[in-house]
Image (tube, rainbow, N blue to C red; front, top):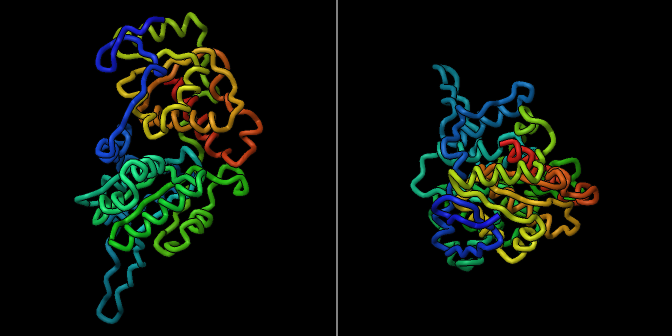
Length: 346
């Protein structure tokens, strides 16, 4: 296929031809909920009655956001009940696809705040890298709310930089809300243990109210469990059609994986900027864990932007081998598979 379009018009582009640059100011401007959560509210969060922890989480987060029920008033001869202490931070602990990001965005929208920020862990660490630690502290100092989605434990250095940053911000009055999808292998069975997150931020453990959310992956409730695979002819037709009305990307899978190694993950969102459909030819299983983790980060950004995906070759839900799914990043890969399946059905 021939590249006939630009990122601002129509046609077909190749992601491997893009080498995006992102400035510190652009990173800061991007610290808002992804487009799919622009309208996320507590009212639009559909708690599954099968899992009471979802409704409980919703009510507790409403209270954290200042929208909980009024405290019971005392009568003539009885004292009013003392409201429970509200901690400066909440941590949402749960499996993937149970609505943690929706609830995080609902907090962002519901909390009256002059200065508030919403980003993934990787976006915040990239900002520290671009601006420097002290400049980042000064940037966020005095802010009302910091939302951190997908708090990572992959890199001890990044983890400690972020925990130090959060500690300084809490001490200056900033409120925090965080989720995580990155368990070490020892935590097992697709679950990030809150106590391990709190252990990593030992100096501020008492600042967080941990809220467990159980449930099944909502992305799998209405679709088949396998990623859709196109024939070469179907793929070509889908990409051509998308390129006629908007912008479609068309890339060899191995070439894209190689290109991701040359682009910082904080810039992946720019790789898919103004792309309406992502096309991947000749998908094959991934053998290198570093490459697999970069692909996970890429899919996270594509999913945030809700970009449909079309592919040929190996089903995308089979690109992570058994060894990877049994290792320390199991939860990351399972989340990515869920998102890959959903995007191929979109």
